[in-house]
Length: 408
Image 1: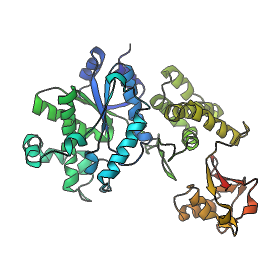
Image 2: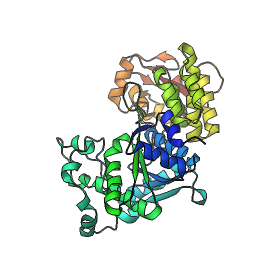
Image 3: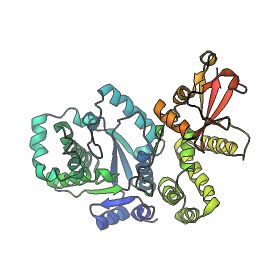
Image 4: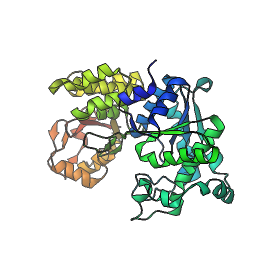
C-alpha cells in the first residue's frame, strides 16, 4: 500500500509539516493515532471542514486511527485565528447542541466501529481545570514574546485581542498533550490557519513529557484567485441538507471556475489521480462534463447517492436535458399572502435567494433575476397569484441558480 503521506501530497492536501521526513517515515511503518479538532461554533459543518474530513478519511483508509476532537471547551473561549473581531460568545447549551450535530455529521464519513476512530470532547478536561495549577503546569512552558509573533495574534493586535482569546493557544496545546497522554496521539492535523497552535502543542509535549509529536496542516479550500471557497451570496455552503439543500450543494460544485475543477476533484473526491488529471485537462465545453462528475461525486459523499442523482436530474432538467424539476429547491408561501401581491424584493428574501432587500435591488437592476424565464426589470414588480402556473413559479438568479415558489 502506498504511504498515505505521498497520497495526501499528490492530491494537494499538505501545506506545512513540522518534520516532513519523520512524519512520512512514521506513517509508513506503524498505525498512527492522530487528531483534528472542530469547534462547534455553528450547528453544521461547512465545506471548509469537509476538506479536513477527506484527509482524515484517507488516513483512516491507510490504517491510521483518527480522533475527532469536538471543541466543547475551546468554543467557550473562541479561536482568534483568521478573525478580525472577537467571535460571538455562545452559551454552554448552544455549544452542546452544535456539538451533537457535528457528531452526527462526522459519523457519516469515518468508521467509528471497534475503536477504528474516536470522538471526544475537550470539555471533558478543560471545563474542570483549576486556574493556578494549570498556569503552573502548562503556562510556564509558553513565552509571551514568542506567542505574540504568531500570525493568529499579530493580525489582531491593532484592533485588539482579548485576554480570553489569548488563552486559546494554551488550551489547544493542552488538548494535544491530553490526547498524547490518554491515547498515544502523536500527530495533529488542521487547516493552515492553525499552524501556530499546532506547533505550540507539539512543543508543549516535548517540554512537558519529553516525547515527540508532530503537526501537519492542509491547504485551505480556495479558488485559483486565492478567495475562500464555500461562500455564496446567500451565505456558507453547509453539509446539513436543511441549511444547504442537496440541489444547491450540487449546483455550487457544478458552477466552479474551470481552473478549479482539477483541484476540487483531487481534494474532495476519491477518484484516482489519473482520472482527476484527465478530467482537469478537458477544455472548452468538455470541462462541463468534469464539473458534473465533480458535483455528483461530492454530493454523493455528503448527501448519499440517491440525493446526488436527484440533484443531477433536476439540474439537467433545467438546462433542457431532462424532464423533471421536482427536486429543484422550493419555498412554500400561503396563497393568502399573494391575494394582493408580493413585491419582488420581499419574494427574493423569503426564498433566501438574497440576504437583504438591497442585494435583491442590485440584482434586479443588473438584470440578474428572471421569473419563468422573463427578466425582471422593475424593482417595484408585484407578483400575484395569477402569475403562478399550476401553483408554481420558477425564479432564476443569474444564469444557473433556480428556485421554485409553490402556493399552499
